[in-house]
Image 1 (cartoon, helix red, strand yellow):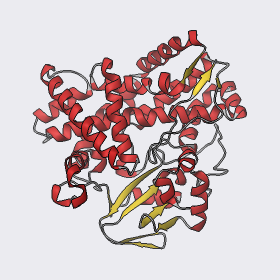
Image 2: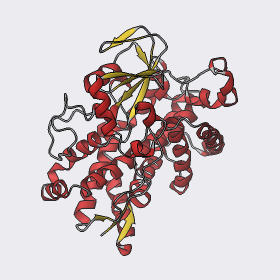
Image 3: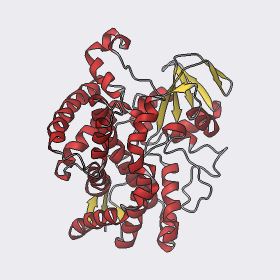
Length: 398
């Protein structure tokens, strides 16, 4: 059994890929997967070095119709659309696109949202209290970040379910090898494009939100095309909730199944920031990313030819015993926790400060207000997605 079994969504590996990672890492920090015909990088040092190596590019999505294989030509439009996201661009395009949104995601700007996030968290818990239970994913971990990113973009929160479906389809496209995921994303992109084409003319042009900033940048000659605008909106919607939803769900599950660690955290709330980082390391919301070799290079002792796409497994790097002591155990007081859950290098997650703040407020408030919080299922189903790692549901009682 190799990494391909995980990538092609073996259910048991999707739920718990870490024993597989440990076995593969025993063969070396970089292994060649014959079924995928490519290299898989698992060691912390090798993943972190690769993600900042300028010889490895992020432009791994077909950008032009003539690049798309004949069998995939009916889907060429969606590849062209997604390729315009900053996630799949190298400098100078990546630098320009990231610069347009980065000011909204600085730690200082995010800190101004603390009261807003706290209010949303309290409202969600208030709604669940009369029921003495909830599905953490449906009733808390999904609506929290979705509402936050909708407010940041300045779009109606009444459309949150629509935004979630669009971003879920994008996450499925990135995390599964199935062609029907492409077809669903094509339909969602058409809906999103129509939605924002109708919304944008209603804007005054001076709104102090992220969508307003993107529109003003376009007007001021920063060459933000309509395709770039819409492509990066869906990226922000997805990044704004997929990873944070999984951070909260994975982290809460880890704590509730480890009573000693949960009790430590209840007794010492000052550990919450460290606990969030440990939850990110222990069960990363994003398990892998990929890069393409733009020049010949070697990773560890493996020679990588030009044009080859390489898997960098963040989840494996975060459990590397060469970097972390006792990596398979959760330790809410772990120090020097330089995990790779948000990636590394120029594509380090732009929303990391926001995800961290949402996670800290969510955990602190749940543990303070729900002292009897407990799981209702021994085994909850995971998302059928190799890249985005999280639960489909997580029922709890209190």
